[in-house]
Length: 184
Length: 123
Image 1: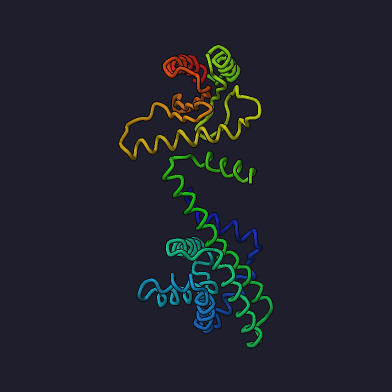
Image 2: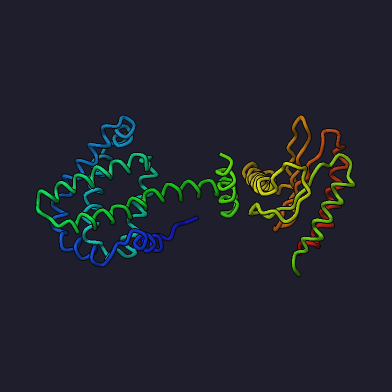
């Protein structure tokens, strides 16, 4: 059950209507994105840090918080540049970020509201700097795609671990989920 | 040769009706899909199939992990009776439900015979 990140990216682009116009407006504001990225990282981790469990996870290892902040800034910047025009390299990196979230235990229940905080903060910054509404929409869409990668990573990694440990086929696993869910 | 599900169904029905204290039987795929079944009323063959395949597969993994070699069967004993899961080649799992009065030796022999009959209908 290994996700093909490129296929997932393409599917998500279609699903959220992430268009070439969105890409163009993001690219044209790449410098602005780079400039506000450290401030957004602060908002993101301030928000997460207010949760005792998350605070514990983020500070469990020396230097982890610093690395996470650095990764966030890079991630934020890449949303604007698209790396390889939001192609395979972009998809692989989003998948990798998702895996890191799973490995260190930052789940969707934490990331989703934290991401909403960032979207809100970006919106305010956008307004303050007199940026167009289209940029907000494009950012909203690419944010949703990136968030989907993180959520999907949780599902994929959990499923892969169960399949590995039990020897169940993917079909059987899906069937058990369907029959189990039906009986809840 | 195509799988003869009608024949599999007949073998299962005969097995259940002619073997003492056997209450039900099913043949399922390793993906947990029912091939044929003759189960007591009220049992959902879709759920039974998924559980049977899951159980046998997990048993095989346990056998591997605990260095018990290839697993012949899984025997689940409760105070109302037993469930026996036997691998029937790579493509199927044979489930037998029996009451607590069932004689284990007889049951195992009958299962062995039933599998010998079932295997040709699968290939």
